Image (cartoon, rainbow, N blue to C red; front, side, top):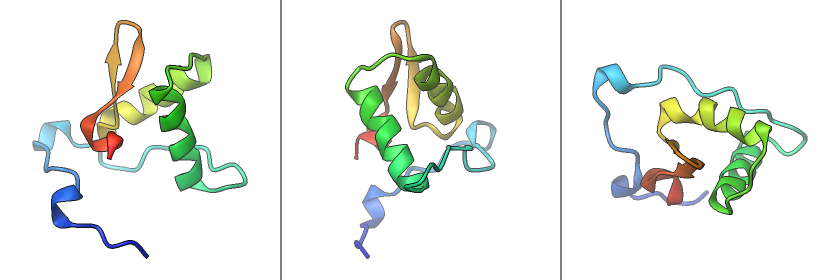
Length: 80
């Protein structure tokens, strides 16, 4: 298992900005981690689809993506 430094963890958020559960990410046959990586890679590459728009809406509360005028983009936390 990879060792993660404390500095690489997500920063604490104010209580009113916290998401209180994990987003419901489709697992598919590869699992949640692989699906999340695929979604974030597609967003990073600028791909467009209605499924990605839905994924962006699901991932916004946990601060992995932010909404922009052209769709959504990755946050600094999800870039790592």
